Image (cartoon, rainbow, N blue to C red; front, side, top):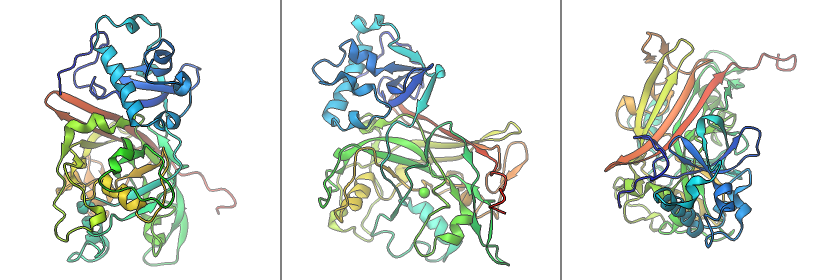
Length: 422
Ligand code: CA
């Protein structure tokens, strides 16, 4: 990749939003309507204003595609168009004589903007594709000797999640009430006391597929627009009681938090790496992929507490995934199920081999048996009211950095019981 330098926009060193990134999001500034923008350093490039002044002439027929509160219509134009828009911005920002450098309000500070959920999410799916995570959970809840279930290395296991409760970074999360079962008594309905995060990445589907027509693993990446950091909040006590036999339900559906910018897959090309060998057992032909399909992205989870602690509690990497995104999408559509632009597919908790790389409190505190000690001496098995979880992710290689910003949310106390709840 050639060495690029922004010519007329200040981009701080080590910014997530380098000239190589240029992710898409939806922002509003002051009391204006939400619309499409692109993160550049600490600023946002207003794509609608750029279009109005002709930056995308010859690429876009409809200049108003950015003046909408979600990116679905833009993404639906297809990768050829969305990539061309991104490359045109890159070219102009690197061009010292660009006529766009003098346009008023083309760039606004991120610190003064409000970010919004960038796509209308029609459907959300959550996979379970980290072998280390699935093994940890199997050891804790089933059989330490046979932790992985027999299907796990054959099927990219997943379930259909909830789209309505996906929140953009910054929106607080209310501790849910739910039914749970104490070991020594009947079920009770109370606020969850085992509230947890799950460190995940999610991809956004970039093209509609037709009902009845599977997407092949080899071509699945053509249907992936970009990626975000995804926190799949989980209430472990609710989950444990409800999940048999149909899987997660209210223990998961109360909220998920995503980072605000969608980083296009092409911006992540420099970070491609090989995935783990899939020869024991060999995967079925419809799931076979070739080439480097995993991404070397450093992931971190920070906890901030009301007492002022700010500690990194997990360092993991997206490269640890056993099943890659192309396999997930191929499997998802292998029965003829169609997908639509804006659908979100999360990876499943991304854990590494060591304790410090486990992507949930459930694993970090080993089911609550070995609480974490934070830097002020306080301990955590699960999350407390007032705790804030901040997830970040980035790739960095040969001086190129491409990051996702933050998926951040604070835990609010459970609602006070109403007469009906009591
Ligand atoms: Ca999950």
